[in-house]
Length: 433
Ligand SMILES: Cc1cc2nc3c(=O)[nH]c(=O)nc-3n(C[C@H](O)[C@H](O)[C@H](O)COP(=O)(O)O)c2cc1C
Ligand code: SF4
Image (cartoon, rainbow, N blue to C red):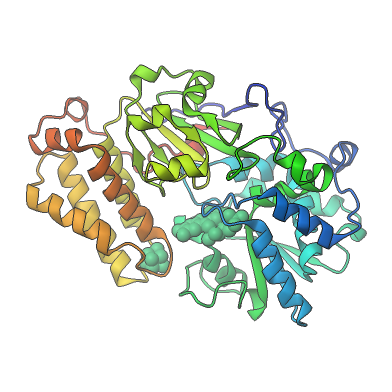
């Protein structure tokens, strides 16, 4: 993989009108243009919108694919019991292989704010936060807020909170802790933010892409939202595509689209594909089974992986063992160092995958890696260790022949120069858009 900076390709999907992307949008979409295209339409009945969100089946786009309607209802009900409520639009985007949230915030801040407005209305929030680490995103959202009539967020204070970028900084309890004035490091759960979040109040943390779907649902209803996608993965998703020696790209893909079609759109020959790194760095590796897959939660889960935040790195020339070693080293560096199991576990798994890449691992090392990939799952305050165990388990399960070649010290890809990326497939570094 080369990491020469290039433009980000932003493109619509064939025969699917984009709902979130504006492929021709170069600068920031202005308030007047957003309103002209139907934005900030009045919300007459917040409960009716919640009903439509429920029927739409909209799932969170931050990684866990949790139903948005469930979150909205839980926080709304806390408000009805008399508590103040809070909504956080999570645009931190700590996944190096993802740029979709930054693109939305930089280019369509009003779409995100409109979604935030609708969410705050449904849960009767009095406070809202846009949580970001990217300076351009923060500037675009701050300017967009200044353009708004006070009536748009009537009774709601909206604050932009910035944070140093980091893999764990976007985890929901880290976001809450940072907004409360602490470090952007995760805390033990429970309590979850909906139980005790910003200022101790019931707080809904939602990814900015998730929120950006709300104006579409308000305008087109659940049925319109479900017009594309699959019954279990309705609608479209923003996919950051890296790897395969191609410039990084952002597509708005209808769930259920064939991976083979993605290869065609992205200009990659199926014959060259060895597999994919899924969900940014989080959801592990998939071998060539990905070639016959469709891009929806149910299918990718059946492959033992996940769509996560929608970032997919296509592996062609890069050796899966070397990619796993780079990602594991990243987890070892970027974990928050708070939990012994994570701090020590990522270091140990990183040492073994690096030794495997370098052709100096033994069978016993692999046996230990396999054991750790099982026993360390679910440990630690946040999901980082799960990301690391996903990489280990998927490498062992999906690429036994490549591993055998490494044990024999005979990997043709690694022999031609090891892949030692500090942040493999880092989309932002590859793109200047
Ligand atoms: C280590 C870690 C990092 C995360 N980083 C992000 C992030 O950068 N942005 C994000 O929206 N969600 C991130 N999440 C998920 C959030 O915790 C949370 O589930 C999400 O913001 C909820 O939004 P959604 O329901 O709309 O997906 C991360 C989770 C983990 C475990
Ligand atoms: S699990 Fe790892 S990354 Fe998460 S809080 Fe603990 S040490 Fe930090």
